Image (cartoon, rainbow over all chains, first blue to last red; front, side, top):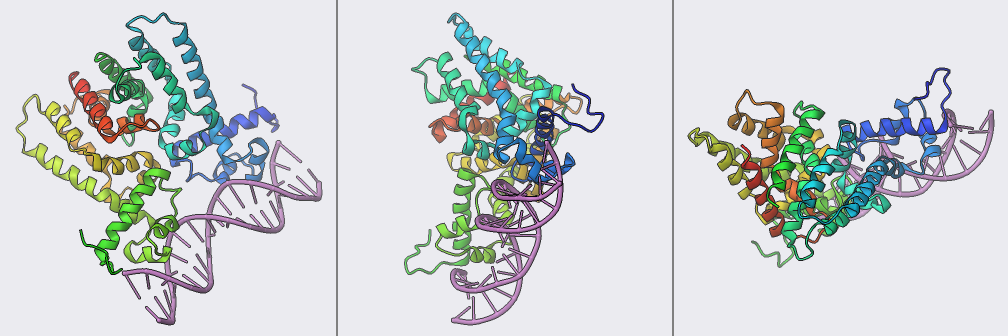
Length: 190
Length: 190
DNA sequence: GTCTATACGATGATAGAC
DNA sequence: GTCTATCATCGTATAGAC
């Protein structure tokens, strides 16, 4: 962590600050309702300055999703490295859910609450499409659509818990605990 | 169903058509990305004409949510009429999930995909707040936040299944089947 | 009930000075 | 890197004719 004392900001630092503010605002108000001015003014700069660090507004959103996509890549590698034992699906689900930490919840909230936009821009960081690969690796190719959906739901309990927690004063830990419990229960049905 | 032959439309009929088109577009592109012109032009009318039928764009979205809120009201009445037996929570969850029919999925998709906007306008048709009452009625007041979240997730499997189904070619029936199965599994944990 | 015309504000984005 | 100035565009909404 670089101290900002002195008023100077390095380029990378500013970029990180923009992402941080954008994350909070996108989570609070949604992507579309957050203007570039909202973001810049919180940082004490003008809209225009944002465009030095990011090509456009979408690039900020994508910047937020990069980490998550990388995490998923690592997860896929892990799966590939596992022997194809019968219990792999269960273990994979629990492992994935456990990668969700309190600090990552806000990114997931943004992803969940702005589906239409993310679907539109998609691109290389499309967590959804990446997840198709996960399902393909873990589920019998003969399995029904319903079965595949069900498996996906088991992976996706954190998003579901986040939705359920909206409005309630539930803490990040509550959300994660509920999600893990749900995954544990769903996984029993495999 | 009134035939439109002759080119005349009754007021109520037009209103219904607007809602129908808006529902589809909101589900496809999201609320914010759908302009009033998008809606009106599909109906062969101008933006301005919409404002005769609806106060503004938000009113269209709220019009879409009314049915769902009414459904929830009825559900709450049903709960109140039940004897407080131990298995009530389980029965309530399954009953609620079963009220979701293929035709209602699109409204739920819109509700799920536009959380930020719905949170902002809220108002009297706030399904989320109404659901707080359901939880209060069914869950031990002493229960932890985590427990309450978990219960809520059991109720909310249809939304979760819809998210999971995005992109996949899953049919409405697949979505509902997966959701019901998930609720069934989650409910076992109570 | 629907149309034309229009006002208005806000937004995403760019050019160019410093 | 950040600013000022400026744009084009878009979306909501209103007024008034038919």
